[in-house]
Image (cartoon, rainbow, N blue to C red; front, side, top):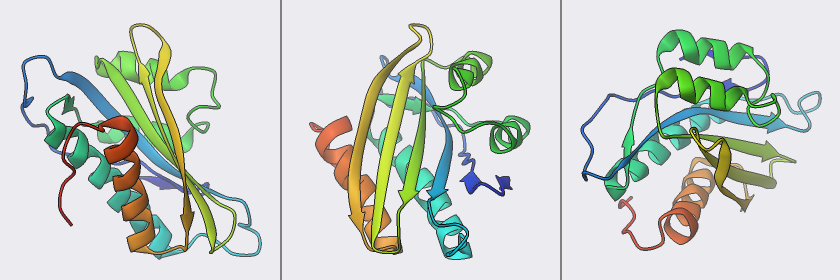
Length: 170
């Protein structure tokens, strides 16, 4: 999986058919870790693995909902995203990626690590054609563990993004 020194993991998944006729196509462009204390507490391999796990979990939850048909990000584009500016801070580059992919929506996740005890998980989704954000939500995480990251994402998706849909077990 392509990564860069700034803590970006671009996640990919296998293409699968939409669960519903009116499902929106979406590509999850990347999971980015903003480590506010990189100089004192460098990003760990465990955190890089968590980025991949959270990205895959997010795509799975979108697919299961039937509201989204998740389209993969080609490896070449994933590498370009990882090497480029941070999504959401790049003057619309994320919309350009979405246009190149031909999807209705693009999404990305940013995890801000303030410390090993305080983190924020942020999920962003934008309509590519309308060029506007359709979903922005953040949840606070207490503790830097696989379980805390996974539970935070599931909570955010279940309660804010897809409140009327059951969440996957686990």
